[in-house]
Amino acid sequence: MSVRDTTLLLHELGLARQREWQLIVACSRGRLDTSNRESIRSLLDGSTAGALQEQVDGRELIATASRHRVDPLLHRHLSAWSGDAVPPAALALLEQAARLRMRQALMLAGEMIELVDLFEREGVSAIPYKGPALASLIYGNFALRPSEDLDFVLRQRDIPQAFEVLRSAGYKAELDPEIARDAQCLERGNIGQYCFYSRSGQLVELHTEKTLRYFPVPLDWEGLHGRIQTVAISGRSVKTFSLEDLLILLSVHGAKHFWNRLCWIADIAEIVRTPRGVDWTLSEKLAARMGCRRMWLLGLSLAKEILEAPLPPAISAQIKSDRTIVALSRRVQMNLPLGNEWAPGAPERLFFRMRSHENALDGVRQCFRMATQPTEQDWRAHEFPEWAWPVYTLLRPWRLLRNHGLGLRR
Image (cartoon, helix red, strand yellow):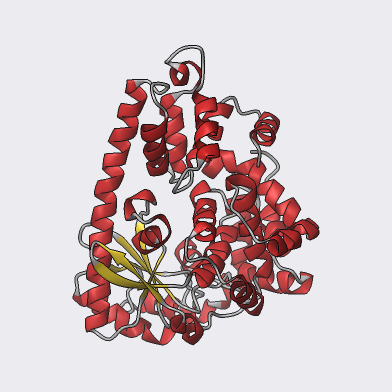
């Protein structure tokens, strides 16, 4: 998306801080080419050396970048290419935020490696998903992509063993199978993820082909595992998913959250720019097989429109020819500057999810399943005896409507 288009969209939203957002977008990539650097300089340019102070609110800039999880990239590029256009006070704030992110990233990477070693010793095949593994793979530096938790993907049948491994290591399960009511939810509920907390409060989430329920088709674990690659983190070789699979996994995750964070789009753009390159034929084939080809194309569309990711002509042509993708992309771009402040109502959420599927019937079927299958959130919201479990199914749509509203006002 051009600077002019972004400005028009921000005017439509009534946002006063256009330049901050444009600067954040310009810096939200792992490497800058000459054109990117010129864009940053033009945004910072003014008649005086204190242009940023005059035209951009430094604190608002950092706060917005932090909400979108791209503040390490902002610090990296402004420190290197802004010259004297950024006031020392603003750079000091960026430096302080970057140091904090670095400490967090080091602790997270260290704990992830410990868990990888722990699972391997106990014979549990759990693959790191997102977090330090993703950051190291596509940015070349795990500190450039902030994360707050650690995610692993494993087979559903390995969950009982993973429970025992983590509990023996001192992690506390959010749902404890030794507690009768928790066991009922684990057995009958549609769990979104299995959550564990370390003694220091670090969150670890386990995902399986059952919990990743936003995929229309369950994950093909054997296929995923056969395409595994490795990435080096602090001298340690760690397994993670292939670029082709990551494009699909991250696109479905972004669609699940309506792409309301810039970092998720930046991740897609960085995968596209990875020197090894993407096997586009394989990735599209896998996306079609998983029933999420339109979500895959939407993620690529956003990466191209917002961050100029270089897509193959054939992929770009498919995006342009799909009016639904163009409309969804436009909607995301209009709301993206708001970040978490944009809260779509239940009807809009439903409509977005339905349109994210290529087949209308599949979209309706998937949305009906998501709207009626109870999750751990429903279990927490109401307490019924085991024999009354079907009541959760009846109450779930009302809980969703109550939580998200009709979206008639922002």
